[in-house]
Length: 535
Image 1 (tube, rainbow, N blue to C red):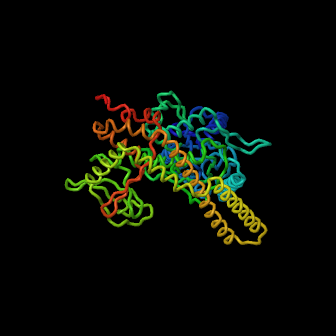
Image 2: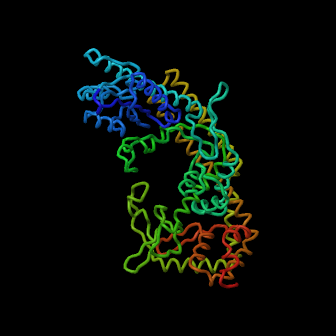
Image 3: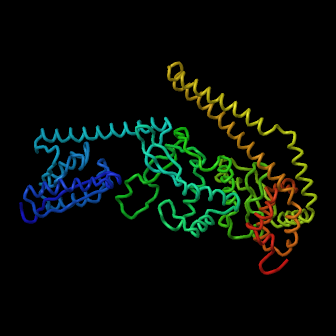
């Protein structure tokens, strides 16, 4: 061997899991021993970690091929053909190295440089690719089977849970991690009772010294938002919600990383598989938090920074129900429906133009609320009227009982349809059609259940609020004239559910204010007055 030509070794693993299991080190150990047995004392090592065999865009492999093209390599030692490549890619690399005078030595499955050897090499690559595809497909099918049986697939556990591996007795499952679960419950409570934003929650958790899911000290609002929106905490884990894809934009300056499927995209909801898991927060609480998150988004200062809009997030469109947003044009401030732009609407439909003067509406609403707060008896009479209107409604227990019976019927119909399909009495298309109808019916029943829960909470809150309504109005009305813009905005959000304007007439739907203790904790400036002035 000429002095300027070297023997090298090449090792590759295709995943982080293989890296963690020291697969690279085992390959290197075998290759180094083979080089020493061959009498080689000096060699160069090329290692690719986290790259699949069907991808030739690998940094170490590219450096090796460049070195071979310069005639600086005599032999390449590889553990097995599938460590280098598979299928036709393996043959391409073998022929390239042969043309450059480089011998490829496989510790397992070595072949001769003859036509028969090339054929055998191609067959080995094809067989390896076939085995890989077969194993991958069996693994995929197996995961789907166990997921449909209600077993957890994979070892990643959401924050608040720990993953329990499969045993001879139990399926793989999630169990509640009590400390983390208590943190999750605290997040949901603070969003509902204190109306904290995700940034406020991040500051709260950092102040308490609670570590993040990765053990860090600084919480990200994005992480908290992901926890608050995850349906797993109400008892449902969805398998196959997303699939791996190439990243949509360059995340790293390293060109080799762009070929890896580090991105993800949602799968069609029909592909999702529901797996029941232990409940950390009740479904009504989870649903209420989703509503509060939407309100937080509407009221977020980032949604409008150029001008102050007193009624931001409170004005709704009387035609489509969409939110009115503030806008400014040539010194004119107004509110208009955001769905006037079809790209903003979730339905893709454009709402008819509708706008109202911001100053006139804000003055009218503030005057009406101020006057009402100074006449608590009128508010109390209105709330009692609402209670009397709902008094004739069907009792909640009776409604829940009927819904429970309906849900059992749906479950029985689903079982019968599945039995008919399994026994081949129903074809696949008919089975899918029947299951889609039943799923739609179940969703309607679930929606009715949530509406019952919401009505019951409203009734309980209304009855409780009447006891302290007069004291609330008395405390707040004392300092109405001294409130700042932000304090006025807080007060209006506290007592107004929505505002609609039609034909020049504004309708204000108010809500029951919180009890006095919660009000003092959440909005002390509204109860005790601004810090700069004693009321």
